[in-house]
Image (tube, rainbow, N blue to C red; front, side, top):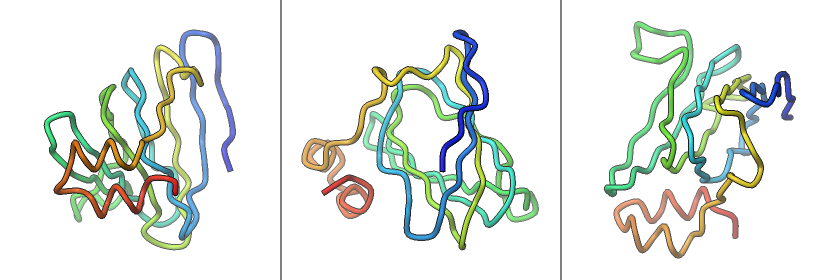
Length: 128
């Protein structure tokens, strides 16, 4: 479920539900995207950088566990998100705003060639 909550031409804000077994696929955007945790189980953001680095961030309000309630993904970083439980409600904000033409879905073969150490992750988070 995705819901557009703001699109004033300068910025966009949405909220969306991640459900178990239904992660987002690897994609990237040209500008920064701010993720916000709202409720539910923690969520994992998976990130692939341009220099072959791979990492992840856990979103939730459990600061004692090192989780983040919000996180900024810089433009140009490959990203995917999944719930670590049954469901997670997240939001994202972008300024300048999201444009569908800027959305780039990950290509499995190209990403695996560029990031050989993350081949299994890439297979799991790219469309067949």
